[in-house]
Amino acid sequence: MATQQLFYRSPVPVSFDRHHDLSIRAGGGHAFAADVNSVPVTAVEFAAASAEYPLVFAGTPEAVFPAVILGLDTDRNLWVDAEGRWRGRYVPAFVRRYPFAFSEDTAAGTFTLHVDEAYEGCNRDGRGERLFDAEGAHTQYLRTVLGFLQDYQASFRATQAYCARLLELGLLQPMQAQFSLPGGGERSLSGFMVVDRARLKALPAEVVADMLARNELECTFLHLASLQHFHAMLERAQPAPAAAE
Image (cartoon, rainbow, N blue to C red; front, side, top):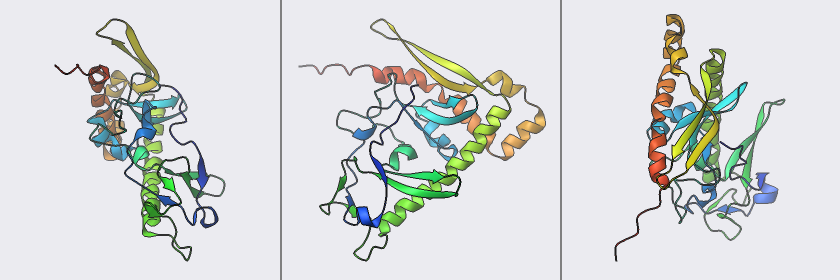
């Protein structure tokens, strides 16, 4: 998995001075995510995400975060079609929050809302949802965005604690996925980690019980079960057969 800047190209802090006349036209599809092969997910998403995508851990041995793999190539998302439509049942929250995101000032303990002004749905023609009303107050749309991102940030924190537990217990190991293409040739994905089943089985009973109580064991089993989707990705990567004349 390649280190990615993902799809935020021009994020700037949201302010009334700069964005008093900005509108966001939603429903434009997911073409912005067509060139990424993975996105982060949080622990609360594991049940939905693991049912469809391979769910792994990316980062460094000191700091990891879960992510779903979306493609065999670094610049192609197999779940976004040529028209920019998401072809999966579940769209990760990281994708759904776009074009918005929080930045954190760790020293002050504060968060600042950003919007990617490069998003094609941003406009100053009144198309879509306004961020501010004429008096400078947040619109209901902006309040909904802030609520969604606050929930996402809380899930992010809980997920960090889960990942720290996996590292503390030494459960993660590097993995490389190898694919044999039907037309010949090989393809591989690397740069991610998975839970070592043998190490998981060797955990003391009291540690397993604690992980169960914290829902960490459920997340771990969902992650392991999701690895079967690597095989389905290879089928998805094949071009569709030409229609008969």
